[in-house]
Image 1 (cartoon, rainbow, N blue to C red):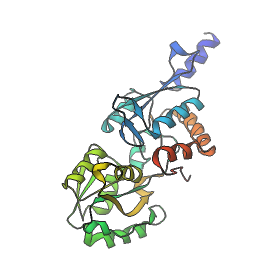
Image 2 (image 1 turned 135 degrees about the horizontal axis):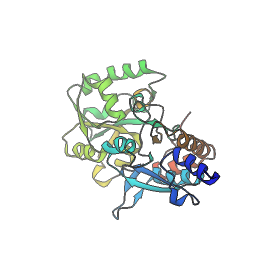
Image 3 (image 1 turned 90 degrees about the vertical axis):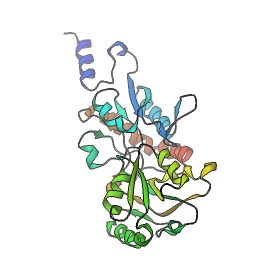
Image 4 (image 1 turned 120 degrees about the vertical axis):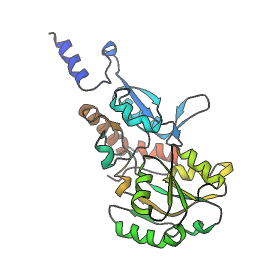
Length: 282
């Protein structure tokens, strides 16, 4: 076997993302996103994918000397399709959690997870306690439980919308299940529409996504209330989803993300798209 064949075989064993027909060129890295989670990732009217994670994906690929191909995949199909080999990685606002780590691997975080409540109008929930506070569930779970107790009289019997199979739904199940009716949706847009129409009383989701929602013309009467939560069931951050055995690809992503954090690229892109610096703390 020639040295060229040995090297090519080593690359192929390191992951499916290297194409033998393009071994002499930059390898193609296929990254899936939801395309329905603005401003993290979204689909423009012409079908073009755009947003913070799309720009960051191309930045990371450039650092890894790879060519990005970003494709859209429904949220519920992201992890099964990754493990089926339909693409190489996921960048879709996916928080790193213990439950997900049972079935896939992750890069180091490229963004911090910030989550909050959104309500309409000036009803009872507009006075939800904790406004202006940030609660790290890893550092102050007792504080979170104390806040939930303060919220109890206002939340009792209300309907809360969350996107299914997300950290928001995990938080609702752990802390709010005995207080509210939790209603799960396929997308954030879907639960925001039900909030607007009055079919639910509040939503819990990524704070950046909800802040953007308040700027939409038909959501001008909406506002974020209560505290911002991070850590705990929300995980250590948002990372690139990878197949468990893709150690070489994980190492390349980790190196690229570390460099993008260190030189301010993550901060620059997040402030451009999210109007907030979501650079991970760790």
